[in-house]
Length: 338
Image (cartoon, rainbow, N blue to C red):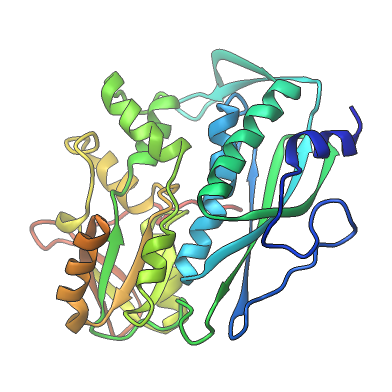
């Protein structure tokens, strides 16, 4: 199959939001009057961001979902996306999971073949989510190589309403959406670092493999949130980006962290997964304290579980207190890419 046959078969769909999309040298896009373009790019690399034998339908979903999460964090309406794929097309990939003790690999050899059937499922998962959020795939690239997936997503937002990282103010309350740490716990189970029941793993695996972008929440936070970010590398790491950009510090209460029943009772693993595990793709934002009741009402209206976990303070850095008021120390604040 040629590159263009592959694109026509699996990645060409109607593009009602684009003047010109897949099939030419460039896409032509019309931004709505009074809006600015919000643009973000995320790359998923096999062996780093996902296992090569990941379900291709769920992987297609996640490839777009992590980019939609960036739109949510900016309070933008997603409109268009491009997709660049490096594919070992027609080849079988064999690999072993890392050894849970960090030395070598375990004995579980896995294999997956990237072929037409794989691409059919991957594109089905990608486009199912794209339809849900009215996103057009308007271009991209394909090449033969190691399995890597890269999306550039574009959306629209009023410049004055964009949720940026640099707006946190002293006295702001810090909020998070959903549960923290489930995705990291599912990964720990797959790596043999934690043992979960089938039911608990199934619940956590959905957070790892099929994250749900919080676009509706991002839009609802216009005029309320002073700053926002999506949690991809871990709460402390990503909240740290807000604090650095805003020139502020923070105090967090670990007892207030929203964690699932599957994570409770897991000792030190609870702290690591909730604070530094990453792959949550939930929103963390700051808002003035006088919006507290308004946010609780908004959570009920949208059926969104929002939790206040701390406050922004003058200074630098982030301090996390346990239930007894002692400071929690972690070896790592989140995922390090390099």
